[in-house]
Amino acid sequence: MIINNIFQFLVPKDKKFFPLFEIASANLVVLAETLHEAVNAPKAEREDHFKKIEELEATIEELSHKTHLELSRNFITPFDREDIHSLIKAIDDVADNMQGAASRMRLYQVEKITKSIRKLTEINLESCQLINEGIKQLKDIKNIKLIKETCKKINKLESKADVVFDKAVADIFENETDAKNIIKYKEVLSALETASDKCKIVSNVMEQISVKHS
Image (cartoon, rainbow, N blue to C red; front, side, top):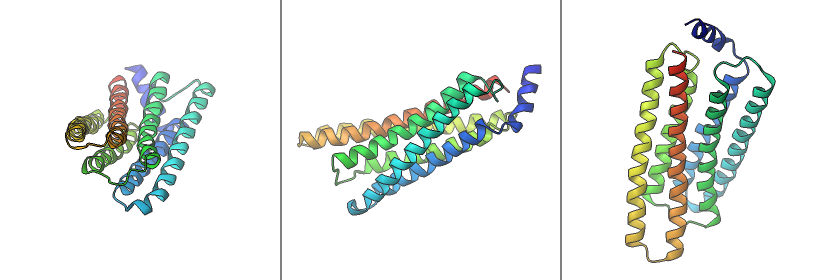
């Protein structure tokens, strides 16, 4: 109990880690928004979106690097060091996989964007928005119920993404005759589905932190 009280005292005072988490999660939302916009835009307009996604992913990667530098410099942290590492890494992994999906669409010159691709980007956008909310909620560690509800919503979205992915892959193998297109679409869908998995990992880390310090 004493340790938890000390933790709760330190969290609002933190001026290093939470700002990095908040900036990273805010950028993650913009990245997810940009990807969703890209798959709903005409092919001629996608390139600008893809470039923006690359820049946002690089920004989040740099924030991850800064977080690890702060870990090496600071003895006192707002919560366990391994949880800080896990949280920023998971956020970076979400960004990396969404950028990976965009990169594959760009490299493979995917012209027709399927409903499944649009749906997965929509699910990932909603999950990233919830991640952004969850990061803010971690500042008020007393409100564990709210954090748990946010994490529960992210987990439900991940399950929804699994269903969309499985159906999309089944449809590709059933209806697509061009082997190249099968590879293209499966690669893009896999990256988007993996991004959803990584969102669930972020959720698990946030919930773990809240339980430890509630």
